[in-house]
Image (cartoon, rainbow over all chains, first blue to last red; front, top):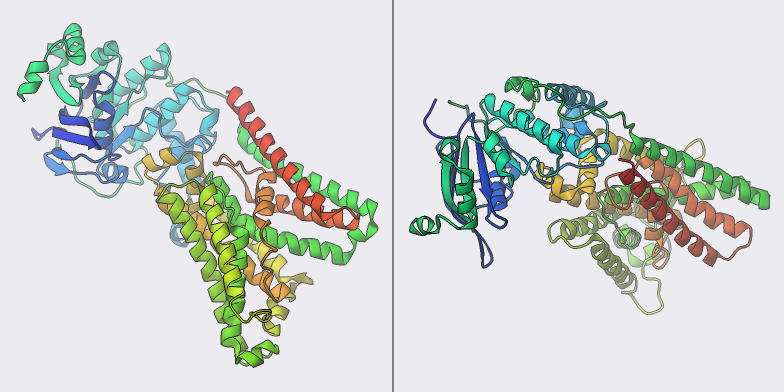
Length: 257
Length: 375
């Protein structure tokens, strides 16, 4: 075990024209832990998530992966380093079937000359998708169903399954339960705990503080693009977190940084 | 915890669940459903349905005028359908990406003009060529075909780059290149002395082999080629990474991008393929008619779009089949010949095609609404 956290975000900033979406954002994600990223609308949560997943690039600051500075030019690079993201809108292709979605962007080729010509190994993909669905207990009659025939919870499960299937180090989830009912939310939260127990660093963005307090080991609070507070769940208190989120507390300490 | 750094995605580790020890917890993550693949069923039924319509049309016109069912008429229908189909194959890929290519017809024309111009320039001296004598026929034909295909490829690549990199709407981009190709074709073909047909007809040997040649079973070369091309296009669409990503990009561009599909490259390749098919069609069109008709291809885009949407490919992207397009390509051509033999003005054909396109899109809309509401 090295002492370095899997992900360490240090004073990262990002501007869009004149709008500063992030300034001096900090975040730590440890292996086998869930780090929650909370904040009000416009706090910069999505921007930070997109930087970590390679969909956006940061202007200043650094991101350390196992202590090594990294910069992702594309989602591809982040994924090659074992960082998977479950986007809020799930990033699924609705008219493709479940297996194709699981392998979207990394389709399996046939062996030999056919593979060289770009032929798909559909049976291998179906078989592995089937196994993946069984591992996560996603109840599907067939992995050949188009995603658009599935319910919201099933789609969420597919997106999570894709991330866990490929993520080796970090799985980022943006509002993983926002579109779900109570029962499905509960299942996703249990799944997050199982993923973390397997030694992966999980980062979740959530609006729901009870949910954050039930799964997170660390809580990072963003406000107006800054990290105003990082704490472990043990030290956290829900009313204090709300105070930091809304700016009722902690403004001065942030200014001092 | 030391993790080995690897820049390669671990392709063959998709059994990740067990690898990470993510054991199955209590309860299913989602409740099982038995929804059949409605999309697939509908897609299959739609090409069958269109086939029935086509047979009804053939029977109807033959009933009204037995000449319609003559060998020569049917051969002409097969011939024209093959030409529409070759173009429509590229159009199918483009429409599956939720795009559209309005420029296919005029790019075909430009490719043909350039091909015949190159053949005339390289075939022999000006007087020889005008009198139909090509001393360097083989070289001229080779260069002509090559340049015709190249024009198609370049035009398609330009469409693709504008759509993919500048993120301009395909409708506007290809409307622009439609006009540009039409203008360029006019410019090249009218560059000579006033009143002179500046580009003489193609070498006879080219017309007699590729144009009016019969490859197999007395079928024109073009029919064989378009059948083979359709089969190939079907295989590519259904069984290759290129095809799968064509569907993915059309189904959701943003999701595909986030999932790591190189969307810009995919779009550029798809539009380039459509351009190449326009160039290829131009070669056969030129060989068949000996010269390229400048004004005669302005509505080819309409016919190919009709073929594709009648065939059940959705203008909203993400779904469609080659088999549908193959059957769909017969409809506009059959109507055209049918109206001709029963003495209805060809202008009515335009009216009919317009109505059919709108109806086909309406059916697609209703199908989507039905799917959305049935979940």
